[in-house]
Image 1 (tube, rainbow, N blue to C red):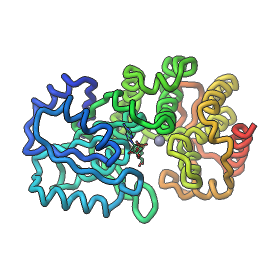
Image 2: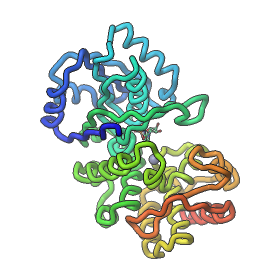
Image 3: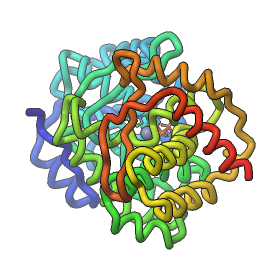
Length: 344
Ligand SMILES: NC(=O)c1ccc[n+]([C@@H]2O[C@H](COP(=O)([O-])OP(=O)(O)OC[C@H]3O[C@@H](n4cnc5c(N)ncnc54)[C@H](O)[C@@H]3O)[C@@H](O)[C@H]2O)c1
Ligand SMILES: [Zn+2]
C-alpha cells in the first residue's frame, strides 16, 4: 500500500516535515506564471535553503514528453541525484508533469506539491495520479505516485484569474454533491468567490478527494465516485474551448438529470444543484454542441468498457451510485436537457 499523501496547511507544519527529511538538493518546478506569482512567496516563507528552479511554459501543452525531456536534461546537467526533493509549485499541469517526472527520474525521487490553483488544491495535487498527454490525447501516459507532502496555502489564489478559480470550484461542488451534504448546504448559500479561497473549505474538499483516492489507490472501485460530471464533462471539454471545470459544470447538470431519471435523485435537489451551477457559468449559455459527437467521445473514453457508457450518479446529495450503464438514447436526452437548461 503506497504511503498516503501528507497534507500540511501551515508554514510550521511544512518546516516540521522538511526537517524530518534529508535531501541532497531541492529543485522547484513551476511554470512561468507561477514562477512570477507564487515561487517568490513560497521561497521566502517556506524555504530556508538554496534551491534550483526551473520553469516550463504555462498551459496544457507542457504536459508532454518533449517538455519532460527538456526538464530531465536540465536536472542531469545540474548534477541532481536520486536523493533530491522535487517541489512542484503550480496548477495541475505542473503537478502532473512533476509527479510523472518524480516517479521516473532515477527510478523515483521524492516529490512535494504546492498547488496554486483551486483545482490543484482540491484535486490534481492529491491522490497520487499523474499524467502526460500524448499525440494530442490527454493523460495517455502516467503513473501512480503519491506526493510525500502537499502544501495547501490559499494565499496563492490571490493572483489566480477569477475564471480559473470558478472553473476549479466545480471540483469542490462535485465533492459536496458526491460525499458531503453539510458542505453542499454551506456552498449553496454562500459566495463562491469567498468559499473557493477559504482555507477550511479547501481542506474539507481536499480531504474528500484524498480519502476516496486513498481507499482505492489503483482506481478500480470507489474512486469512480470522483468521476461524477466527468463522463459528459470530458466529452464536452474535448469538443469545446472550455476550461476543465467549466466542462465539468455542464457535465454535472447532465448527470444530475440522469440521476433524477435513473437513481431517484429528488427533483428539488436536482433543481437546487442545477440552478446553482447555471448561475456560476454564464459562458455555458452560448455553448453549441453536437450530441452525436459527444456520445461518440464517451464511447471511446478509456473509463468505459465493452461498449457500455457508464456513469457515476447520485441517489441524493452526498450519496453516489457507481457504474450505471446508460443507453445512448437516454444520454442524448440528458444532453438536450442540459443545452436547453443553459440556453433559457
Ligand atoms: N492527476 C490528477 O489526479 C488530476 C486531477 C485533475 C486534473 N488534473 C490535471 O490538471 C490540469 C489542470 O490543472 P489547472 O486547472 O490547475 O491548470 P493549470 O496548471 O494550467 O493552471 C491554470 C493557469 O493558471 C496559471 N496559474 C496557476 N496558479 C496561478 C496563480 N496562483 N496565480 C496566477 N496564475 C496561476 C497557470 O500558469 C495556468 O496558466 C490538467 O492537465 C488536468 O489533466 C490532474
Ligand atoms: Zn475533474
